[in-house]
Image 1 (cartoon, helix red, strand yellow):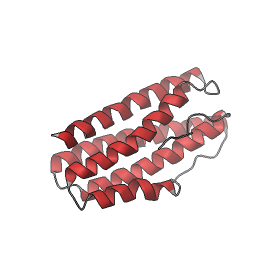
Image 2: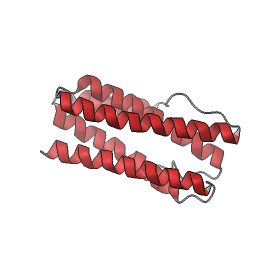
Image 3: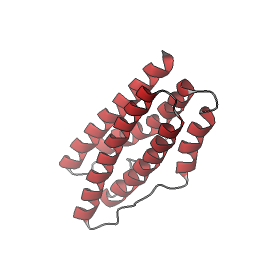
Length: 148
């Protein structure tokens, strides 16, 4: 799926949309943790979820500094991200991780676009690059683990 998150024309809307995306991701991580069988996989996914929670904290700080509302939950897309994981759980851990990896594609793309977006401050673009690196690390682990 191609995302437009990261291409917003105002910094306020960029931060808000990234927050919504992060809340959707956290919901998918919660579903994944519930459905995985392997305790080591659950632990690793919980670590990745903490990265997303850290992203939410930083984005919420940015929203406050901008004087704009910080969304506290995802949107209807959350049902797509969690639904893929729920369906995949019928088959097992490898399939769940493959489903989660597809969710990471959109998050990576959003942060890549945000890091290049001229409406964001230099400090914010640096944070977006770090978040992109986190998402890349998550996706790489999911892909490698699902393939093993």
